[in-house]
Image 1 (cartoon, rainbow, N blue to C red):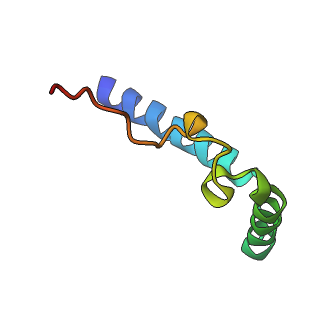
Image 2: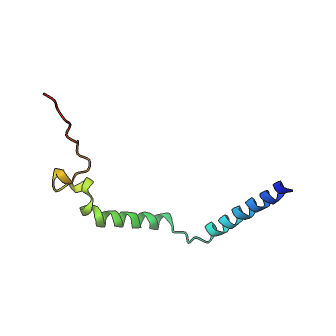
Image 3: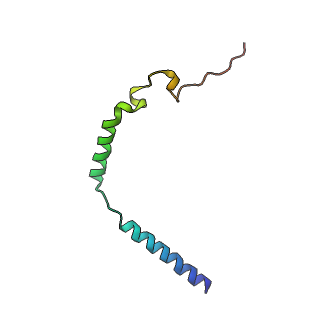
Length: 70
């Protein structure tokens, strides 16, 4: 009996999740891509990977200096 109740509860949870997902407003792919392209072009001046860094000190990707023993 516990297996049946557990299965029923699981199916109800799945059904509720599917109802929540069905209620989400969908956006056409063409509109989503256009929005992404617009965002990227508006913010490309702020992207350090495109325009570089003002100095090497603020570059988190620079190679760290290593300790050298002479």
